[in-house]
Length: 71
Image (cartoon, rainbow, N blue to C red; front, side, top):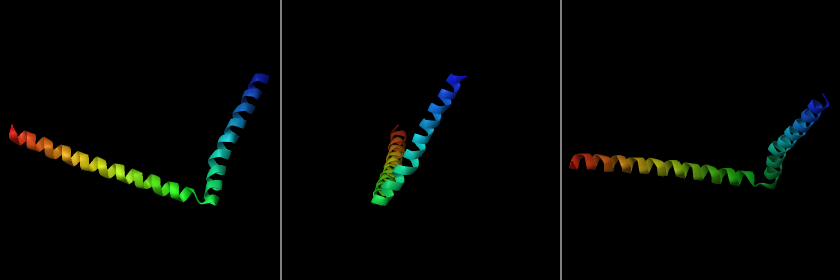
């Protein structure tokens, strides 16, 4: 039974550490003004990747259509 309490204590400490990292670090970064810049950069990169994927898909469809017409 002592092993179970030790395991629960270790799991509790790990969960507390994860909570501190999940809540504390964004608060500190927000106080420093870094988070908004990072979020904007990540959002911009995501939009750019989506646009690139759409352009590649359209180009592929056009090339496939031209190949089908040539045959």
